[in-house]
Length: 621
Image 1: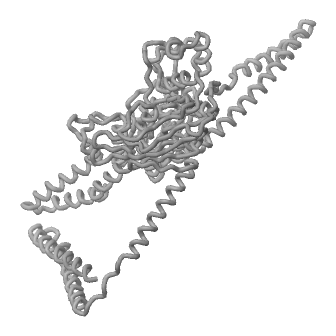
Image 2: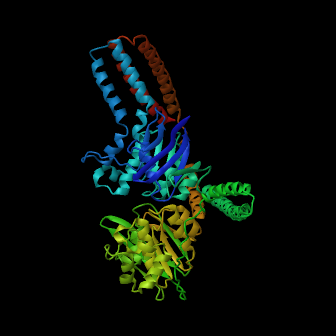
Image 3: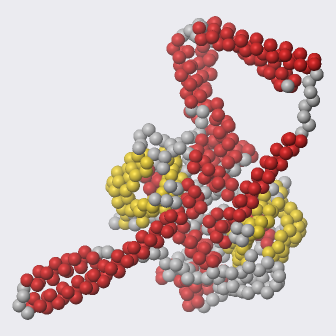
């Protein structure tokens, strides 16, 4: 069964320029599909069309009529007095409406026992059970915990949350709504590693359909069964995750290039032959003109094929300064707190030349603060952090700003880097800023472009400690690959904060895992660290089981206890028989409201006595 069908979709925002130009694809029920393409290719536009927020110029779009569709990038406007908990509970508003109707019917049934009221009560009760009414609170807590929405945040006003926190809450609400088709637009942008892994697990077990726009390559590899790339407004299909897409895309490019070069050779051959035939035709054989014209038509068709192109690789690289000392960085008993919130205490760590360290951990544990302490942008409460005397650091912060955002790129380079105009142009060109781009005000740049410009400024001087705080955040896949190429050429000490597992796995040879104010220092790759954590979890569970085994066993029961237990067992048997008789009586008197109420009262009394007897029996056993 097809959940989504898109045929010949055309959409333009500027006259004569189609962002989507004949896009066509089908998504079958239950598929998990990654949507790829460079920034600005129309991925988000497609999602907005699918949910009906945007109209389109040509083509056809259809979504299976009975299916509910939800988009995560949209954050609805809620009443200003709503807390986060109100937003999460809004996902179950239909259940609460049914619950209210049931309460109203219960009140009505006290005076009216008509058959249609009883039938309506039974129907609504079944709907409440079928839709998960009894598990609603449990599911809400489970999803909130998985997406790192703690109790304190649930009590906060929704309007007071940050953009990232709102995104997490909205994702939780969408999951709780049991939407049939999930459209996820960069869902991992504001999630830490723990929450991202939870979301991956949820999607893998989700029975509905998922379309995900993401620049998180690890995420795409885990959840996507196939990928659709939007290229020049049209769809290209890849029957695998991101890793398959990378290899297959390169194969297709090389195949297109071979075909193009073969066509060019054919054009050259046909052009010479056509010219020769025209020449012979002038010597008295007019029929050769027709053959020459036929060849020229073939040439015209072959010339319509454009040379396939790939995104240009940037040639910039860091200028490393060789390191001769023993220690690049030393942290001794470092502590930091903000008011009552203690981030970490007594951290003692050291870094030597050439090490590549990933600082990871959940959001809010103090990773960026730790980096700022190293860079002396924050003051520790106790302890100290210092860099070796021959260390020359370069720091790329998470939030990038410039001294004057109205200056253009070339003026920014001239003022801040103290270089000559030609040097500034050469360095900007190496980072992909060419031609008129250099006159763009820095304030008008995208987040990825600002990262690129800041790196361009950092690379002008010799460095031997590179510190990056979320370097791939908000970058598209092409920009992430460029960032990786650039970092790969740098051979000195590297310390970086990241939630990008692909980036971590590629570069980290040492992991600093910050949790509960302490750092786990693991020497190895990220995949090895994950295996280490998994082993730790198994050891912890085994240790708990061993402790439980060693707990003192209950003493043997005395003779009087045995008699008391036997008496309780007889009483339980008698109460269970009475309960069974009452259940049969309730079925026989289902149309007699007054009698039914009497039976329910007796049932409640016996259930209460039965629970007491069970507890006493358990204590004796």
